[in-house]
Length: 382
Image (cartoon, rainbow, N blue to C red; front, side, top):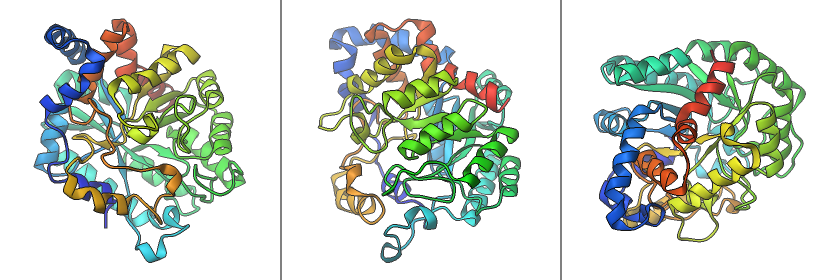
């Protein structure tokens, strides 16, 4: 069984564009000013390279349409997740939910989907691929893992690199043989084997991602990676204490090594209490920019391109899928889980308008939308 997010998002989960824009109004100003603002935003958005470092979509024609309509230049899609049976999941979700066989299967499936839809999609295996996709009006797809499904064998890193994977988290929420996750009982950091994994990833041009990793594991990933490492999808602990969010010290150390932090629209990570709006999301961008400068912040929505589900009839099943034993209650999952104004395929276009309204200049917005990711891709992937 694939990860439950896909099942709960499949039928009509995203908001209609008009509704999402209505939600965005607090960040965009008065309603009568929005048309002019959106025209400026749409022009800038069309000229920019847009990178979402953690998102997904269904490999079908409906999913393809959402990807195309989003105008996202590069989506980094997560692979290889399989939901274990509830009775066998407690304390071992990470060990059972990311089998090597599923990782290989999903790499093959995405590569096949990209090839079958080559008029719309292109692989993103280098910066050149992403720039070429922009020039040709295509959407490029980068493959990633939210865990390290190599089963203790460094040679499997080479196999996945050959299959098109370009970024990989060291851990998910629990401990693996590389390090401790963000909700693990301990906080031991990177193992000796984990150091070997990081070294080999650097050699192969694989992005070292510690978004879901524990406090010390995240520090170790930054320290021991010879190339810039990343947080593909997280938020700022200074604005919202959550086990998945990163401290100011994490962010400073990441930036000092040239890394980039992608911000997620998962509302429990943006803000503790509802409502959670685009303005709250932009507050996290502001915080990083004030802390370390404009060159170290990007986007990583952690959702389907079309957004999180909102239909009330899906609430109970969704909360079961995102509760114990799969996720600890410290995650504080709730329903709906999207950020108001940023919960459909046009989310980053609305954000562009919100950033203009907040006072960001064009050069800065271009970096946030994807320029910073392109810079770090060039340093690590090539």
